[in-house]
Length: 278
Image (cartoon, helix red, strand yellow):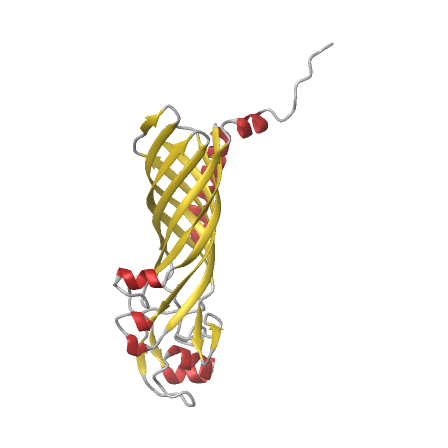
């Protein structure tokens, strides 16, 4: 996480500057679905939709300029993938994971469309930085198993990488459209999360030796590493479980918020009332 201090410090500075300058505050909720893309996903969009999982969250939007606003999001959801729907069904790998994320996003509103005196539309692009937590699990013998502690790709053994972190930095990017009617805002948003890890699904491009995983991390790790090899012994066989294809996850959300105007700004800008002299 040391390498991630700079982008997160920049996000913190953005938070402080936005709060100090904010004139208009929106508080809202969002709900929709999460989609996974990686070694265990399908290239067929219809199959990807079948693997979507629910997502929801809350957010606060601070606006201090006509074209830009800053948004703080706390989201919860899940992702999943299965080789049954991928290009390699014979590999027999699968995973699921719950996840949460907190991010800071800057919105750029390209233009404003006025429908009436009380109604506007705002198309926008967004980008930001955040932190997320995930925990991939694999299904075997009627039970879900946490994969990261097992070391299915030899993590922790001599000659292999150290166990990956389940809390990571992400970079949200996407687009949306907002419909403003008086104090309420309704919207639709879609975007992805650029990740710095390839272990979202516990599968990467590491060269793995089944016997080394069996002897070093145990029979369960070896079975989940390669279900096609014997379960009761280690086999001196090398294989790649995945590729260099980068893992992503995507979110499609409907948003609903209420505009408090500058009431919150006034409350914090003058917290101590001034008493007139008698």
